[in-house]
Picture 1: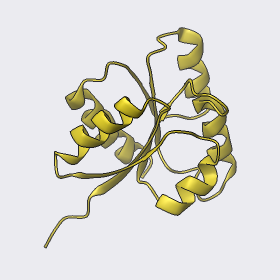
Picture 2: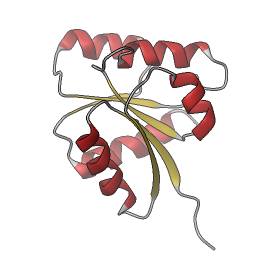
Picture 3: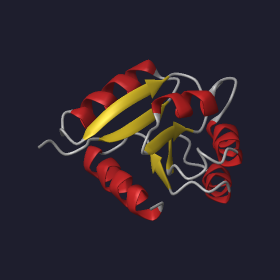
Length: 128
């Protein structure tokens, strides 16, 4: 019997990053990856795809990662989904804001595949 794959939602405005991350995670055989290029309708999109964990870029047009996390935290269904911020912005102010909003981890681009998988597995345990 096949083990249920972990559903990962990746939200980033960089199409190349979405494609590479999806490929890297799905080739392990452990993950099913859904991608979004915007967080504009984040609560509805998350409810529609029911991810086990969310990887969220912090700097995006329209709705940024911190704003999206805040929206998810207000919804009783989405507030318990672990969120990992992914960003090229290695600035303490962003990191601190993200943790204050309740994200479980923060990963800097370029992302190491093994490191990302470790952080996903830790995030899944953190929110159980």
